[in-house]
Length: 228
Image 1: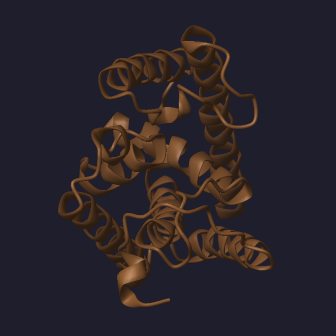
Image 2 (image 1 turned 180 degrees about the vertical axis):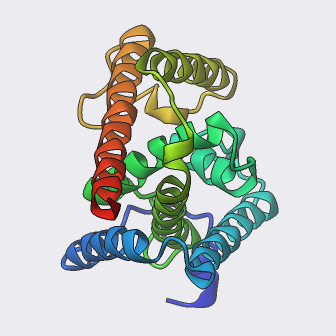
């Protein structure tokens, strides 16, 4: 495969990972462990910020140069929004906290059930998917290990934020004919109409964010006990 194939706009089919699937899962577990150990180390933090910046610049440069359709190129996938939130929102923002929780769940699920664009490896969209979600996981974990104890977000606010976010994405999908947030055609369960898709995705994401928050709450309690 030549360099041109990395940037082609000719769609074929998504790559089959084979044994690389388990390599990627191994990287996920490695990042979780390393982030727990080294979240306060500046070089470790800068590594994932740099990875995320390069990934976003590369992907959106390709989108702009190829005049990619708005149905695919806007930053309104859940993980994509989390990437920008972790990069640009202030650390004390409750929305950065929310997207760190959402991004932790989303980046792990992205490797458990990867959904690639229909291009061969190593197309820029495939590399962006892999590098972007690994960087997102690292950035989210680093942020949560550093700042989780400073926030309190009730489950009611999590639900409200999730449902409002997905309502916004529904409007974007109607305007662009896209499937941002997988609200048009959710994976695994399939398309059950816009309203039911919206409810299913919103309920699952709300529960997932609350679950990740509870896990970090337990981690913080364990750290507190170990220090006393």
